[in-house]
Image 1 (cartoon, rainbow, N blue to C red):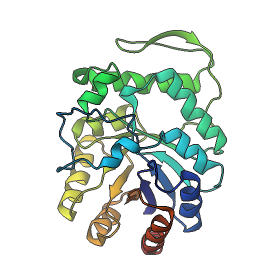
Image 2: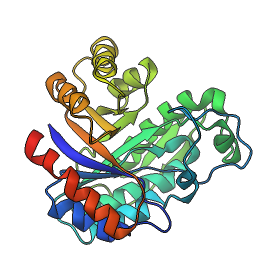
Image 3: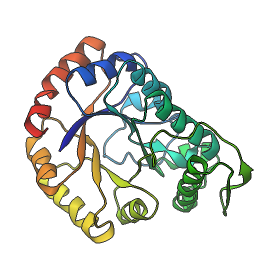
Image 4: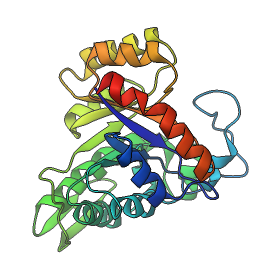
Length: 275
């Protein structure tokens, strides 16, 4: 099982170039970063992990800027989004951003996407929360078309464009596209429109077991990677390894450069244990 870092790269914390270099130097397989364009001041959507939402969710750097900074100072690690909120994005611009990052990194991108949970945030982007799943389905098909066709076009209910020219194309063929989410809809989407399932970290071994049971029922055979596991919970990590997880990106919360590097030193033992 591969061990990566799932980082919340935030304003005032360790710089993404310093972080990327440190992740690679310590032998981790990947660096995943998350995305929130903003956090609405007035919010009714409950935080999915329970309790209050951390303040740093409003301070996250743009994931493609952060990953590009990491890409230019590294040569080996996979660079992933965990996850990009695709339903709040323009599909044509996003196709170019992802492909450009794949070119800059010499083919090291894993694009993780999900519909998202913050309904107020979606509405600020003009997205109807009630149709976000159907929108994402069309966006994923459109991304594939733009990445693989010289004259791409797509005509759907939510995404509609006549033939376009758009380069660069990704270095990877295909560029791995993983669908994030917790439930059966995400698992099904991962098999229909994606190359794998990017699940959130479980809180205990029973939660890991439930995730693998869901995959067996709704996404049989799909690779499963995990973003956001607790790097100190070896019972959970063992359960992921024993269940056949492809990779686990353990959490690195925002901190100063010195504190972040010290935490990475602590987590580096996981590479030796599971690598």
